[in-house]
Length: 137
Image: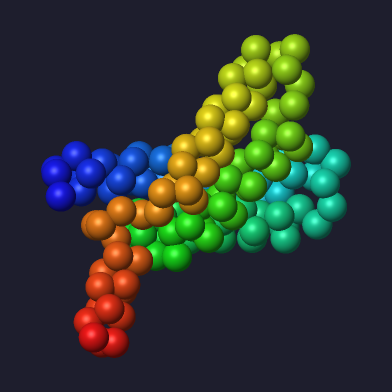
């Protein structure tokens, strides 16, 4: 296996997860601010939304980095990124919202690549698959 196919999926997972982990951590440290933002968008149950966002962003980001249940986690995160774009960044006449909308769409695209191609060889998914293969051999 060449170095690029060995290390690139890990690097890609880390780079895409960074924004989610940082965002999730900021929500964890200031939940009231996030709940206020969710309420201002007219969505119900703002504190439930905060909890969901923390789980998807922080826990999902960490799972993406370590490569555990990667395809499922990446799919959930992609759907979350699209939903966030639609509910919070849909005023495309505002240049800032336009940028955030398409940033979220781009992140969803990157996450769908992870869904399609998996975590790569440097992941818990690959490690567990190797152990499972050895256990059944």
